[in-house]
Length: 342
Image (tube, rainbow, N blue to C red):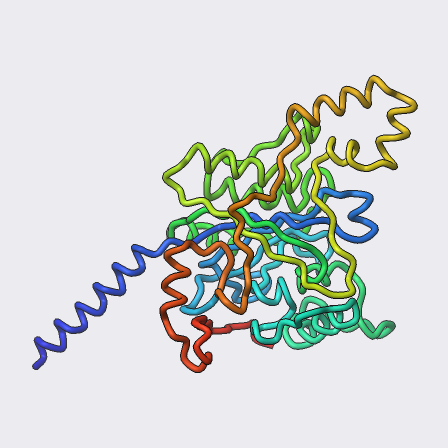
């Protein structure tokens, strides 16, 4: 009897080990379109990193995900309680809710802000406390939540190994997390490039021609796509997360530095009148080296009601679709929501 139990336990442990070894996580660069007044002035957009197998113990401490969790989004922000980076669970980052069934079909600015503030009150008060002078505190904390109400997001995804995720968790948990944000040299794109180069050394590089040496979200995406083409052994996929319909203004296409000058009339027209040679040179640079477009025919639209995470492979989607979800009414998607402790 004892031998049978021991044998059964060994088989279970061996199966679990084989499953863990066979599983590959994913890292995705999120290329987010610009929006609003600042986006019209600086149309380079925003960059963030999505990790499927890394989760947030707190907004400033990472851990491996529990079964059923859908990963974390990491990014650098200008001013959120003095931290350099903040980690947010996927659904709150995109929609400011914990469950896909709570995502509204349409949204207006008031609804989006209400959802953000409700989540802040429940989970983020240690990092974004109330402001006695205002009903809802101001600041960049709103960029942590509900990004899909404001903009369209493109994803560029590569598979990762568990040891890579473990190394990233250890590195981030051990290092000082204090802000040194700089719009030109230490921004969200630099942060994303650092993580991607951590996983895939020398994968992301600056463009000294079309971006005059600055790292931009679009250049990071372009570099990652070129890296994937050179390494066909890595499974590369793209996806898009659509902006939630509603009364919020639509986001606009993301540009690089030179492209921003060429595509923005209020910049290019005065330049063409005052310095036609310079303007012509910029157009030549843009045509020759800056026309990368994130949109692609093979993009998969992420629907959180139908799949637990974006960028899933065809095999993973088939496994999800064929596995009935307990208590899901046959939707095929099972997730376990593990959130921060309020």
